[in-house]
Length: 427
Image 1 (cartoon, rainbow, N blue to C red):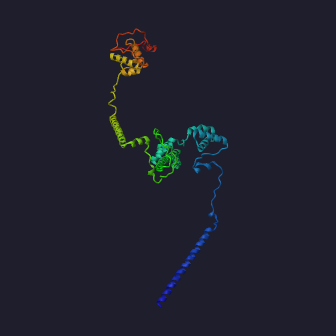
Image 2: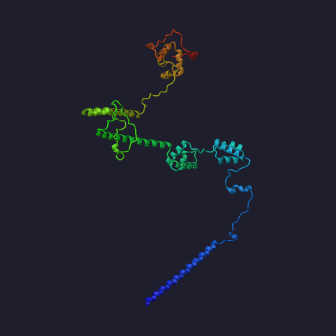
Image 3: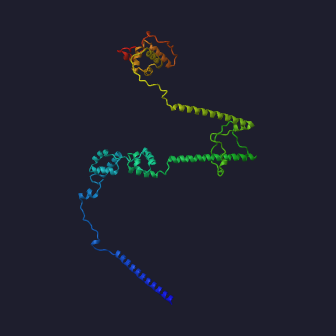
């Protein structure tokens, strides 16, 4: 009995709980339906209507800076025709590099006066937005150094603004994955060369295999052989089947690049058993001698480099501050005569030889002492050597001091004018 009563109590409690839960759910559903119907209803009244301001007529206060807080760039005007406006924009573009917005802004600034705007265009030339080849190369270098730090990139391209750099970056970024025409052509030639090399290897391998089969077949006619005097050369390239595709090492039967097999050499080596050893020994001796030459040349080059490390200051003559002197000593006179014998009328070279006389002083010496040192004969000897004739007999010893030429003077009028009116240089 007690168990039956306990069960009945539990059932009654569960029924009461379910009843309360059902009532609660019904109340929630009713409240949600009321809210939904309340949201979907039309609200009427002054509190739920928008307040429309009064219409303002056209006035200057309507376009004041306080309300718009911007700058008017362009406002059309009937006083400027479309043809005249197009002509003005084209001239601003071609001559001064303006865009349409900048050109119209200049026209509005001058109150739609085309003549004043054209005259003022040159005073406000904008920065060019064109990218030359040098600018593109500099941008790529700067991007490789600094990445997307456009402020640092602008330091290498100071004439470009940061918005222009960003704009060019995105256009340049799209073309980075593309290959140029030169790259495609180089890649094409490389693949073609590799294909030709593989075809050569396959051709030589097939010829070798065919030669083996021909030697085994006695019924087949012998192949045509080139005369022994013919020069070996590369075989004509033909497209062959890739029979050695799975065994590439078998197809590599050709010698290295620059080496060719000739029938004469093979015949000579196979004539006697000792010929191959003698030939190889001779080639080894030549190789050793060439290696010795290479080693000696390397040693000479290294010694020369060590000598050049110290510089050439030791070989330079000491620099002396030479002072020009108008007085001619006996040694300087003899040196000048010998210099005229060697250089002729090259007064610059003669002045450098004497080292303390100017070119003008050397010219004066030549005109003044022409007869005393018989300089005309010395000059004739120099001219004869220059023309390739037999040189005249050289004068031995020191030139005579009081010798006077009996022949007429061969000096030009210009040289006489240089010395005329002047005094001869003192001894």
